[in-house]
Length: 580
Image (tube, rainbow, N blue to C red):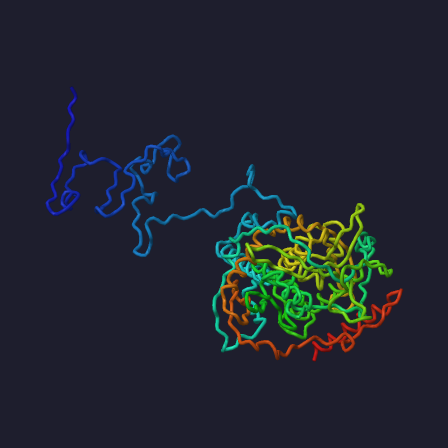
C-alpha cells in the first residue's frame, strides 16, 4: 500500500495563514509548484483557487513552443485573472462593467424595420441605433420631457372642453327673502321621490274659450323644408293667476272644492325635484280653502332654457344667451308657435262660455280653459284651470292638443346641430333636450296630463343665425301621447300627485294667512315662509321691453336677401359692442 505523506504544517500563533518565517524555510519538495499564494482576511471576497476548464496550450503566447507548456499555463495560475484583484476604497466590489459594444443584428427578430410607420411609432423609440451613453441619457430625458408636456397640454385642453359643473354657478333666488319673513319648514327633494298617491279620474266642471283646428301640414316639415316662425302681435295671451280668475272665484263661492290652482302651478310642484332654478309659489289660506297663486311677473310665466344642462349659461343680462334673455325668447317662441300651427280660416270650436279674460271684440289666442276637479280625500277636492291649444278630428273623434316649442339658440352649447340631426337622428336630439331641459319637458307633459289632452305636439324651432334672436324657423314638429311620453321620460303620475297631496296636507295645517314656497337657488329643497298679508302687493317687476321698442330686424323677403342683411347687421353691432 502506497503511503501518503503529509508535509510539515507550520503553526502560526499570531493569526491566520502560515507564519512569515516558514515561507522561506519551506523545502522545495514539500511546496507545490506554480501555486501562488495571496494573503487574505475573513472580510475579503474569495475567488477561484483552480480553473480546470482553461486552455493550457496557448500557441500565441510569446516564448511558447509548439506542443509545449508555458509555466503560467497552470490551473493554479491567476496572474491574468482579476479574481484576487484588490478594489479601491471608492469602488463598489459588486460593480460590473456592461458591454456597450455594437452587437450584430443578424437573425434578430426584434430588429426594427426602418419604414415610415416605425419612424413615428412611439413604442419603437427605444430600438434606435446605438449611441453613446451620455447622449442616450440626454435623448431619453428630452423624450420624457416632450411626453410630459404633451400630456399636460392634452389634459388642459380636455379640461377646458369638459362641461363645467353647475354647482360652480351661483343662481339668484326668484324672490328676495325679507328679514321679517319667518321660515316655517324646509322640505328636501329627496323626500319627494318616496311619495305616492292615486287619484280617480277627474270631472270637467266647465270649459271656456275657443279652439282652432291643427294644421296637419306641419307634421311634414323637415330641416330642408322649414318654415319661418311668424309673429302674432294682434292676438292676446293671458297669464292670470288663481285668485284673479273670475271662474275660480265663482267655483270657490259655490264650494265646489277646497284647493284651487292652475296647471302651471301644479306642474311646477309635481316636477319640483327636477328643477334647478329658483321659483316661488304664493299660498293663501282663506277659511277652510287653499289657493295656490303666482306673483305678477313670476318666473312661472317664462320658460327656462338649458336649466338641467351641465354647461352654465352666461350670467350677463345684456347677453342674448343669458338665462333671462333665453327665457323671454323661449316664451315668445312658444306663444307664436302655438298659434302658427293652426288652420286660420275662421273656423273655431266654441265652448260653453267665452274666454273669461278677454274683452268684447278683442282678438284672443286659440286656447280653451278646462276647469277640472280631482278628489284628494274624503271631503277634499282640488280644482285646476288647465289649458289646451288646439283641436283635431281623428277617426271621427274630436281630440284636444297642446302645442309647445323647443328652441335651439346655439349648437355649441348643446353639441347637437338640429339642422343635421333632426332627419337622421331625431332620437339623439330628443335625448339631448331631455338632458338639458328635463324640467321643462316634464312640466309640459304634466300639463298635458292634467288637461286631458289626447296629443302633445313638440316643435323644434331654431334661430336663423346663432347671433340673431329675432328671426326663427320651424325645423320639425313631432307628436306624442302624453301617457307614453311620461313613461319615456320616467314621469310617474302617482309620484306627481303624492307631492301635491303632501304639500296640500302641510299647508292645510297652517293658520289663516299668506305663505310662500321658495325653491332654494343653491340646494335641492323647498322652504315655506310666513309672509305679511300685504306682501307682493307693490312689487316692482322689470318687464322686458315691448317688441315695438326692441331692435327690429328688416322685413324678410322671398329671396331672403334682406333677412341676411339684418343678420349681418346684428353681428356687426355685437362685434362693435364687444370691441368697445
